[in-house]
Amino acid sequence: MTDLEKYVNAPGRDKQIAEVRKKIKQLGITYIYYQFISVTGRIVGKGIPANHWERTAEKGFQLVYGATANLFTDRAGDYIGYGPEASELVGIPDPETFCQLPWDKRIARVYCVCFRNREEKVNPGGHLTSDCRGNLLFQHEAFQKKHKMELRVGTEPEMMWLKKGEDGKPDGGYSNPYCYHIDQFESLRPVFMKVLEYSQAMGLDMIQGDHEDAPGQLELNWTYDTVLRNADRLSTYRQICAQVAREFNLIACFMTKPFMGVSASGCHHNTSLWKGGKDVVNKIMFEKQTDLPGMPGVFSYRDGGTNTFMPDKKTSHMPGKIGLYSIGGTMKHINALTAIGCSTVNSYRRLWDTGFWAPVFADWGFQNRTTGMRVSAPGRFEFRSVDSMVNPYLMGSTILAAFEDGINNKIDPGDPEERNIYAAMDAGKEVKKLPMSLGEALDALEADDVIRDAMPDEMWKVFSHYKRDEWENFMATVTDWDTDTYMDCLP
Image (cartoon, rainbow, N blue to C red; front, side):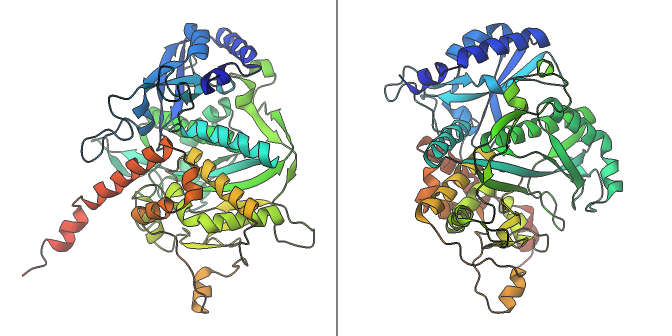
């Protein structure tokens, strides 16, 4: 069977499809968004009336391959990744991700996995490798099968709520840049309470939040989970913020650094590798499972098991062997990983505007925010060279590849740096900086076979084309800075 046929004929899938039909009837759903994720993390797909659910679940829907690259063109006017002669992908829904939209309860969404067209001459019905969500799904399954471990991730999604001017463009932050000030947090209460309401209704177990130190900057967190579920929830959270922004006539800004002189928006990834555990439905605000406005998988979290990153002994604060090897793999590949975590030209404004706790050094330590990775708590590693524009599916795949390389080859990460890295430099330590531009990071990624292979075949083709074009576009653009600096230089 083809990959597509294996997927639609997977054991238990028929039962899930029938359960979704029950949810459609129970909730009064009339329309469904079939969603997948583009190279930049954008949500794309199609809308289909709910009465076509069974047919779409079996046959899928078709959309041009170039949708995985946002259907954008490069500087030369050529479509990125795929031309107009390319076939159309087949999107197959993942029933366990079916969930009602709380802002219009007639509509539901479901995430999809993308496959090559059934009529392709080469690998018909094969998994479409430019589908970053599908890549993560299959890569994590292979890692689990080989190592009997799973990757769990918790993200810290900073973003900014900006006022909208009469011209529709940003007109400053909604609040003042005072970190942790409850008064500034309170000023955004109507906004974040609506975000919380929608988030909980879509399976995000919200646990804490605060005002960060840029204008209108909030961080709202939910419980960590397996890497794919967490990526789906981050995408869902962004979708929720966009809807709340429409309701309040604001801009939900996920751009990394819209303002100089204040902190940028990061998206630290807290990671751990686990053995065992089970899925538990977190009912959040629903008394009975039958009341869930979606499938149980949307409201489930991985619970229990053994965290392999915990210290070996109670008397030692060092991570166990698997944890140290995973850090070793991350340190070996951190330059390439930076191209994924800091994936835009604007990302590097965050690294250059020093003094705001952005990591610029390829090192690791305990509670050390000047390094690219820190042990933020026993059993949890925080990857810090990642910002609010990240595609969490690509980030998950590449972190997994770095961890696996460290484990397979028992890579020693070296001693942790527990000093402020600037103090260590003053004391004579030789340090290595992360790439400080998108172009430099892309060079590092291209030279790193392990991380590049985590973006197989057409994923690499689309990503490299898209991001090289972005960098070249930037380098070829005359900006206000150019004219301000050079217009009156001579004579």
